[in-house]
Image (cartoon, rainbow, N blue to C red; front, side, top):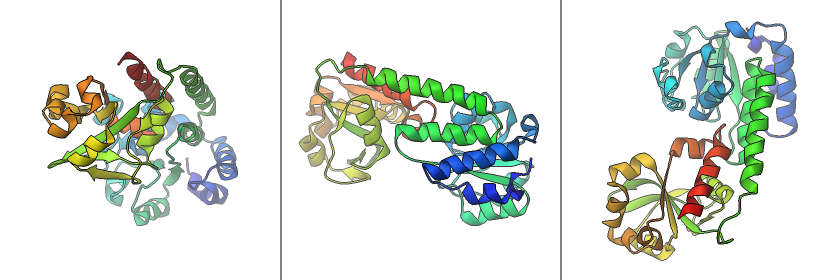
Amino acid sequence: MNLNRNSAVRSTLRFAPGLALAIALSALATAVSAQAPSTLRVVSLGGSTTETVFALGAEGLLVGVDQSSIYPAAAEALPDVGYYRTLGTEGILSLAPDLVLAAEGSGPPAVLAQLRAAGVTVVAVPGGEHPRAAIDKVRIVAAALGRASDGEVLEASIQADLERLAAMPLPSGVAPRALFVWGRGGQTMQVAGSATGAQAMLELAGAANAIQGFEGYRPLTPEAVVAAAPEVIVIDADLLDSLGGVAGLASDPALAVTPAVQAGRVVPIDVLGFLGFGPRTAELAIDLRRALAER
């Protein structure tokens, strides 16, 4: 399969929503119609991209993945081409791929250009930090793999989960203030502010971000943690384990006085899935909504 010789595909596979996405899908569908997708050798870059390949039932086509592709567990058994943002050309070409599915941010750009020059098709998989991004990924990946019908089934499943989530009320009817913690360094917690994927997921699940004073992910001082007074703490499960679980959080003077820790309202999550906006987006948001209801 040699899509990169199709100029229409090359010109439309960019990270753009709406019409550009529709044009890209049309070009891909035309290009793959005369090919034999079952013989493809595929390298997937980006955890949510790889999840999408597996969710489409196309994992048998994969010959390599990047280091962020750790879900499902079977992905970790595949050859590793390095981290998707700091790739090398030779490692990927050694796997003789026909197709590279490149998550937004994959690179450096020179490496992707070298892959194209070597005759490898490179399909840009759109990013985005909103539920719609998961569906856009499914459409692009399914089209690139020649599995449009499987993509439609998966898209319908994601949409059904989103609708089920929207119908799930919070017991109190009020969105609890949640602190999203994804790291810790010294005496500070690395937390999510506004304009982040974490905030988008918190809101999708029915919580409100307790941090509104800045955008992006930043360290938060103990004083700021106390001032935020979160009612729920949503935290990377691996980080929570490393800190000694909820008891470990309670040993931190700042966290110990928060309503969240005092009430035991601590929710561990799979941070890569939670922030990946891939096929599990709605499912993980439903899990968080249920956790909020149980506490």
